[in-house]
Image 1 (tube, rainbow, N blue to C red):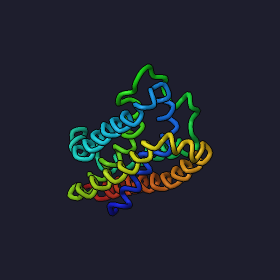
Image 2 (image 1 turned 45 degrees about the horizontal axis):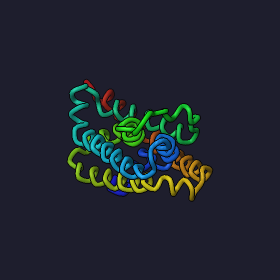
Image 3 (image 1 turned 90 degrees about the vertical axis):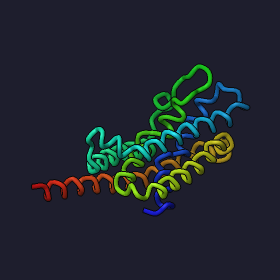
Image 4 (image 1 turned 180 degrees about the vertical axis):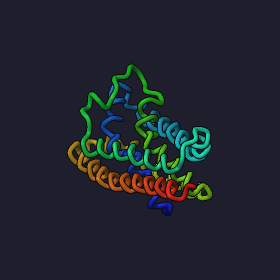
Length: 200
């Protein structure tokens, strides 16, 4: 995978379009003049968390004795569940929290932006080709910048596109992500099979 295709995959996993309604719901009780600062702060926190998983993910796998094939299967399953939620979204009451005051880290940065699917994807990329970490980091930064620009414009996009258009875009992204998740799952199964066949 090159930088652009990896960035597109990470953009789908970050799902900024699908997060627009949730961001607006969480920030509805916060003064409007604080929204931009809060979203930027939460995006920075999410970026730090994702970079940590990108650079240290393989060491985490080694410490937990998790094989790359297992991570591929698990990442495919998680990504598939995220894609299904994008295509068939849960009711608003099940996807947002009633928070008193200003949100911090949870739920905007983690898990809405830096969620389990994004973390698993980054660890999988590093586990397969650790020498290409500059490429994966560049792809992450590119996807993060686009996602951040969308979320910083959440209120304007919500008014401009409307709820139905946002839902249609999210479902389309979910369909694409479903195919990626299945491919990741099958690759993990294939790696596990090869490991069994070639084991003494």
